[in-house]
Amino acid sequence: MPFIYKPSLWGFTAAAIFIVLTAIEIEAGEWVDALMWGLLAFSFTVKYLPKFLIFSLPGAMAAFIGLAAGGAMFIMYASERLGDG
Image 1 (tube, rainbow, N blue to C red):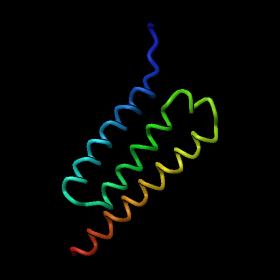
Image 2: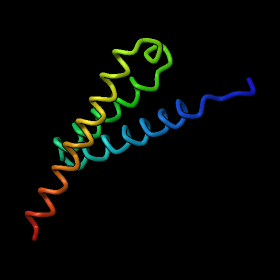
Image 3: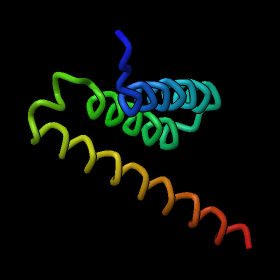
Image 4: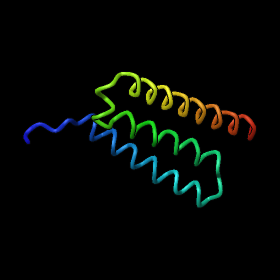
């Protein structure tokens, strides 16, 4: 197959990285961080599965979950940084 759908490949690579980060946070005992990484990994996995891309609603839901998880992680990071200062 000469054509590889690269965005799907990159999406699965990102999901694998997020799953590794989830495992690291679980071992560290940071359950909230692990939950955020897990949600992000789940949303990337669902978003880039080809059978879910056929239907628009699951893709939109995965994108929303990804944005919500990313926003929650940013807010958590910002609150920790502001609390240190």
